[in-house]
Image 1: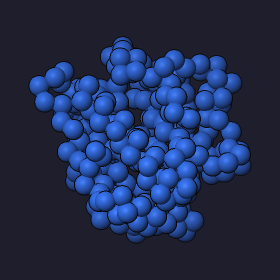
Image 2: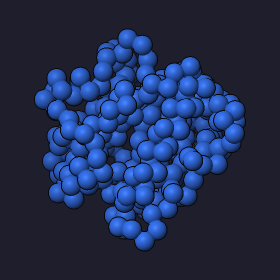
Image 3: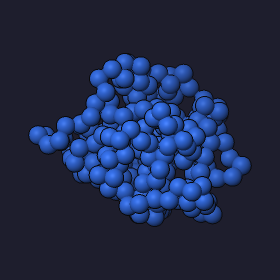
Length: 236
């Protein structure tokens, strides 16, 4: 869904040169892990593409990534924000077909700032994964760390982004909330989503056999679900 003539996206024209989610580096890490890159894109439209996470916490863990270099969802215009949520709902449908559940966890580490923040790649991308039985609520972890949330509107994210503040976006049980992100360690939400005793830093599992297996299973499972849905062309 293109944004047309509405409020312009806030694009950093220089940062994309060394961004691992922009050309020419977009699929370099996939190649380093001996995993498919562009052929692993599960679905795409003019604004977003969907691909398995390189170090999946669980089977079904995917990234929704903007084609354009936008720092975070706080930089989205109205159309892009609406389009991202259409993708979120489509992934829920695909999970239902692939795994028998449409209950998912979605999260985004907002932008890195001088005050700190959770992002380790400053290019807008949402993590989505099926909710596993018995895993603790990510929102509960945030609240225990003194990071209470408010309803996640585009305006709430945009205001923090424009003020130079970081944020943590969580959609759990269909209730999206945004939480303070300043000073939060990198990959904080990955750690919360992984659960106790599990490897959560992507750098520690990237390219290892179990991680590669989860990537390839995710690719196969979701390709089959998308094919059954009727194609992988768009989020509509």
